[in-house]
Image (tube, one colour):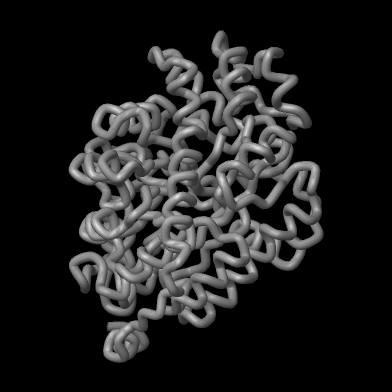
Length: 431
């Protein structure tokens, strides 16, 4: 049976009862983890809890008690954040990239409002912050420093003024695309149109630098990654991505890009989503999707078209014959180690993607389990200083560097670039 060591209790106050199977495997490393996380805030680069609350709780999210939530529905709640030693969180304010962009703006503001309400309703737990110094101060005061990441360039509706408004509301990074290629940047998971960034896309990166917002390159194509790395005056981040050498999805980061991240001074924050951790799980997922299409692809395709029950039975038979591969904490640690091998210890962090994904590695079931990953790395010989860099020091350095860049650019006028009318028309037409 795996339980939290008593040495962690002074640090992880107000922790809920944790099921033994999901408890962090801290073992003999508990006291070391407690010392590291007392001095350095553990900062997660990406958590989709605001969107999960919007989707599952609807309007109740504004008033419901968020202290203890059903672990079967949510990866996150207040008690489990403390149990996992969380010191800072970039809350994703994601909305669907398939929505009209004007609607994306409205829904983004709604998500931002929810993050603000967390701090207003639970000031003893959360503190809204914008700078590295503010985050350290919140952590020292026993609060979780809360930042926001706008997870998709479509959410600015091709407007630098909207981007500036998000910054004024407290947003700390912009992910240049989500799942769809947009009028000024190619996505990793859509057909490319621009071979990276357009001139307007480069202007977005420049404006992010001027505002002191981080340029987030998770979800973008490799060409977009390289263009942004070339243009950015400040270190970039990957808020929730892994090493492509270990799991060959375009959502992950190639060794060639990792070397550029090191030269830029940026950070890659490792994702816990099983399909980005395990190559076997990635391939299994693609095979399962193919089997679904093979069985039932209306209006004209599929062996069981018009027979959904038959298609469901055929899929169940396939799943019994092809069990889903299980991702592990060890595989997540392998991604961390690979990023360190290629980019260096100063360029890796944690970006779980909790509440934004379905399948997670065994032992990383929610925000209470961060110590299990730290313990696995300690078991591999990581020093306390290196654990501190992974946990928070690296992203804090990147934040501070972005702040310095913004100060150096303070005399520049507000960005005034406008997307060409032809590009706007093509985007509205869905081209």
